[in-house]
Structures are given as C-alpha cells and as structure tokens.
Amino acid sequence: MFEVKKPEMTNKTFRLPTELVERLTKIAQQKGISVNSLVRQCCEYALENLKE
Image (cartoon, rainbow, N blue to C red):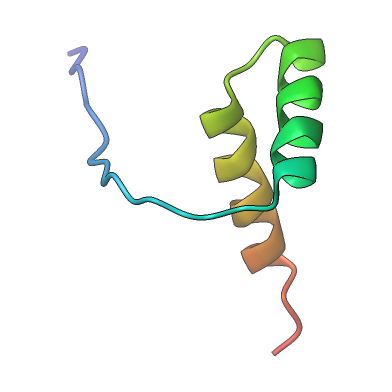
C-alpha cells in the first residue's frame, strides 16, 4: 500500500560569503532547483566523499 512520508527537516541559519551565495543562486537557477536543495546536495556529497 502507498504510504505518504514527510522527511523530518530542521531550520538552521548559516552565514556564507556573498560571492558563494551568488554562485549557488546562479547554479540553482540554471538547474531549475532551489538554492536550499542545491546546498543540501552539496553538503551530502561533501560528507559522503570526506576523507577520514
């Protein structure tokens, strides 16, 4: 049976350099996704590929 799931999310504020935010915004617009989604994907990728 189909079950609708809602992932748990947490709001957090981060300070980022203006130039980085501008780059992220431009890429997100080009890819048709939100900046939030792009930042989440970048963080997940970085953590998965972090050398221990």
